[in-house]
Structures are given as C-alpha cells and as structure tokens.
Image (cartoon, rainbow, N blue to C red; front, side, top):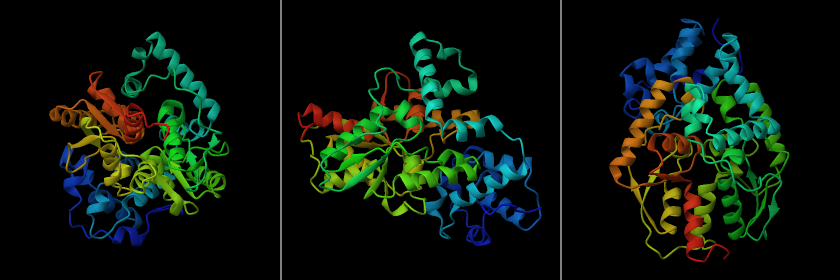
Length: 401
C-alpha cells in the first residue's frame, strides 16, 4: 500500500541518508542491542522500503519504530543532515492511520487528556492525594516508575496560567505553561516568571494556550498535534519571544511554522539575560553540580552551553558525566511503552551520576528529571538549572534585584 497520509517521510528526507553509520555509536537502542534494525540507519531503510512498496505498514514495521526513543542524537552527527525526527513522526503518523486500534489508551492520553486543563487538574489532584496517603506504591507496574519520580505535588503555589506582569523594558514574553508542566512542575514555571521579569521582560501566560502537541506528534497523532499548534500560534502571535520551560516543549515550538523564529527554551532566555548583564552573577563558590543534557535540548535544539552558563552564574562548577549524552530513557511515554529498555537506560544514567560523587543534579526537562529521581533515590537532589540559579541569588540576597 505504501504511504497514505501527507505526513509521510519524503523521498528527499530518506535519500539524504548515505548509510555511513556515523549514527550507530550515538544511538541508545543500537548500543543496547547491536541490531541494525534498532539504529537510525536501519529504521530509515525500513521507511524507504515502505515508500518503494517493498514492505507494508504493519505491526512489524510499527515495532521497529516503537523501539526508537526519538532522542535525535543521530541528527548532529549526520553528514547528510537527515531530519530524522521529522521522518520518524511522519512514519508514526502512517502507523496510526494504517494500523487501526493500536494503543488507543496511550493515544487518548497524549491527545484528549493533555489537551484538557480540567482533566489534568483532576488527575493531578488524584496524584497529590495518592502521594499524601502513600497510595502511589499501589500503582500498576508500568506507571510506578513515573509516579516514583514525581515531585511532591503539595505546596506548589498558584498556577502561572493567566499571569501578566513585569516592566517590558526588554520586550514582552509569552510563557508556555505546558500541560503537565504547570501541574507537576509549577515551581519551574514560577521561577521562569520571576527571572524573566527580573531581566526586564513583561511576562504573560495566556489562558488561550494549550498543550504544545509534542507527545501527540511523537505518538503519530499528527492531526491532534496540528490542532494544538494552531491554537498556540494564535495565542502567542503578538509576543516578542515565546518561552517554554521544558526542553521537549521548546523543541516542538521551534518547529511551529508561525512561531519557530520567536520560540526559545528558558535556558536560552536566561543565559542571554545573564550575558547581557540583565541578570546577576554570583561570586560564591557553591561547589560541583552534575549537568544532564535532555535530548531535545542538546540534540534537537543544539543548546549545550546555556544551561552550563546558568549554573556557573549561580556559583556552581558543572560536572560532565556523559560525553556522548545518551538518552536517559524517559523519552515521553517510552517509560510505559518500552519499560525494559527505559529501565536499562535509566540505570545507566543513574550510574553515571553516582560515579561522579556529586549528589546535586541539574536537568532542564521534566521527563528526564523524573527518570533521574526515580533511579537515584532520595539521597540526590534534582532540579531545573534555573531553579538552582534563582535559589543561589536568593541566598546572596539578590533575588529581588
């Protein structure tokens, strides 16, 4: 049958792969298995076979792509500049169309639930009660790793949705509250608002926004992802800069046709303000801090230096743990979809942190943070780089500068 949707990988995208194999050493699933079919090169070959009518879009083809984390570590090392992430999403959209009934619950979660503020609030209330009563230990095994990595949901403060404030001397910023981000990681959003306003921005968090659509797109629900994108493009069209506090969200925003050039990750916005002298630099030596690179920050957006500059401005000395920056195994819903591979990768990342001898960790993505916390345990403190930075300024008495 071949391709049947307009989302499919194009001939140009697939032909850009020169089969050189430079992607193999940086691919987590190839390193786990040694199988060609578990590599970017192998998956692109399978996509080409579908496009040429050699194989069908079926459960076998779907299984090959399900095992992919979508970390996009292959993109920076690719001499052919293959847009692997785009091709992967296109192929998964074909699977959603041609293999009906697959993973209906998961697709309902990544579209209907994430697009509903009421459903998210209700679900988060249930989680908060479960945490308080100690009931989350009864969670089904496939969800237990996620719930064990959650932050404490009590005492999060007020939602940032609807916030508007700041001088605006440095321009007006629209903040993407996110779906689970403002429910489960609200302190990160509140920290972002504080720092952006300290840097001279007016910060607004429009109520008309919705989920960025990243998880829907990664899961093949292209239609829902486009709907989310359209709503957000309308909500954020008048801002000088649109900022997201989760690396996965900022990477997806950068791909919006109407917002791409104005979208930025919060680490980029804060590092820029530090470099421009609009945010202060601490003179206190606070010791070492492990830095973990989220895949959609390092590989998808090529943002590497900015989180490190933020930590250095806070007085920390960043400690590198992985020169290849392999995926931690969180990867959106991968923890539920491929629990064994996710567990192995999570353990590998946790072992890298432990081997450093440092118990403070900075990670700029919620899924990575949860994966790290669930594998490291209570002896380690994991937070967003901007949270470490603001806490340092407040220790210095400069949090209100």
